[in-house]
Amino acid sequence: MPHETHTVKTSPSQINEEGLPVHIGIIMDGNGRWAKKRGLVRTQGHLEGLKTAKKIVKAASDLGVKYLTLYAFSTENWTRAKEEVGFIMSLIRQFLHSELDFSRQDQIRTRFAGDLSGLPPDIQKEIIGSITDTADFKGMQVVLAINYGGRDEILRAVKKFYSQNAGKSLNDLNEGDITAFLDNPDIPDPDLIIRSAGDCRISNFLLWESAYSELFISDRLWPDWDKADLLNAISDFQKRERRFGGIKTKKTASAPSEHDEKNY
Ligand code: FPP
Image 1 (cartoon, rainbow, N blue to C red):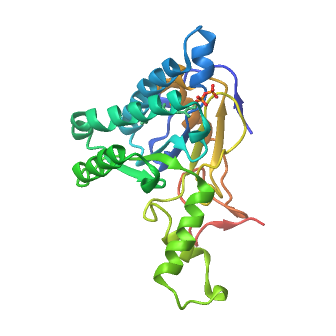
Image 2 (cartoon, protein in one colour; image 1 turned 30 degrees about the vertical axis):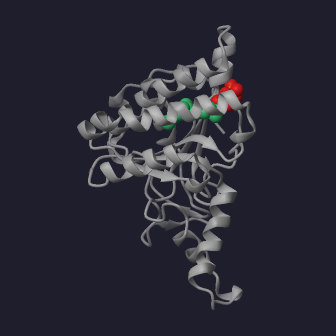
């Protein structure tokens, strides 16, 4: 797996627009380490991380990416110190509250993944407000994964399925049934999952949806990320050959079609 340790400058002209990943997921890691390196408190790292998130949303939207999922708060992040959790929640609140003008300008639509019911009521309200206010926007869709865990999403999907299909036998349950009850069944699986700050793990992010995602790990800490890092990740993605478990495709982001050459 490519593991970026330095920044290779990639310009937008080196990106093939037709081969853009349709859906990018990002594990925004390294805020704490970024702050520690500078002798700052961890929350300062999250503040910078939020600024970076805004920059990357804008860059991805300008490039023409259709879906961007940001892992902002996991179901496991509640175990952090109360002050840190409170600070991240206030950043999320601020982000949701202040972004409408920016969203309108670029027609960026807000989506959500996670267990909404487990979030503070005021954040739930902000999330629902942002989803409603941007529902007709036609630009990139930003999925905010908050109180999100991949295992939790799958479990909730199975429970939702059975609550609506009480009579269905377990033997009849298929993959499509689960997919249909995930948080955003209309959004295609991520083509590319990026993780900053060097750790090579998926950390409960989009477990079901990432079955055939390409992974890109960068050593750069999330607050240090800028458009050039996103371009590098996309450029690297465009060199990959995606086989989806045995079908050779062209180097594009799209899922395989019947016309692709078989390559077992
Ligand atoms: C991981 O860094 C980062 C988080 C758990 C929080 C990410 C949240 C934000 C950037 C703010 C909210 C963003 C949006 C888009 C609403 P870490 O603390 O695990 O870093 P470390 O591994 O270096 O300690």
